[in-house]
View 1 (tube, rainbow, N blue to C red):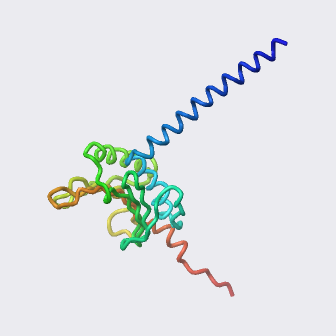
View 2 (cartoon, one colour; view 1 turned 30 degrees about the vertical axis):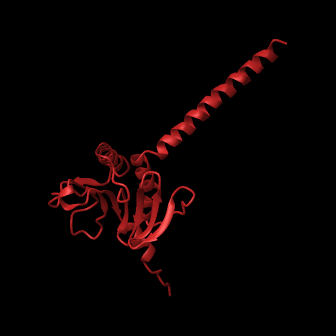
View 3 (cartoon, one colour; view 1 turned 45 degrees about the horizontal axis):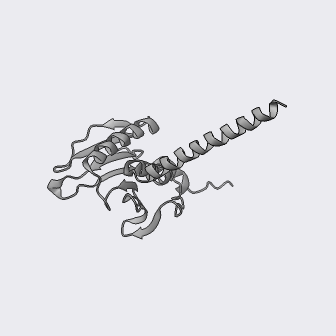
Length: 189
C-alpha cells in the first residue's frame, strides 16, 4: 500500500521536472532564434557545409525564408537578418541584410574561427594580408595556392573605409566531392 503514494509522488515530481526542462528548452530556443551569431552558425552547418561537400542545398523553408537573388539561392533568417547564399563557387553566410553590432561582430569572428578549427582540423590557417580597407580577413585552406585540390573557408569583414561593414563566413566547394559527381562512368568492353 505504501508503494502507491511513492509511485504517485515520483510521477508528480517527474512531471514537474519535465515541465521545467521543457520550459527551459523553449526559452533557450527563443533566445537562440534571436542570437544572430548562433543563427549564422546554424545556416553555415545546415546549408553551406553540405553544399561544399557536393550535396544539394536542403529545403529549410520551415526554418528560414527562401528566395532566389541575383547571387543565387538564398536562405534568410528574418528576425536576425542573417542569410546564406549558394553560388557556383560555394556558400557564404553574412549579415548583409542587417549588419551585426560591434560586440556581435567580434563574437561571430571568434565563434566562427573556433567552429572552423573544431569541424575542419584538416584545414590549416593561412596568414593572409587583408585587402586595403578590410577589417578582418582570415583563411583556412586545404592545400597551397595554385593546387587544384585547394578549398577552404574565409572569414572576412569589410570596413567603414570601403563602405562595407558586413561580415562573411564562406566555404568553397570541395573539388574532391565535385570531381566524383562529375566524373563520367567507365565503360567496360
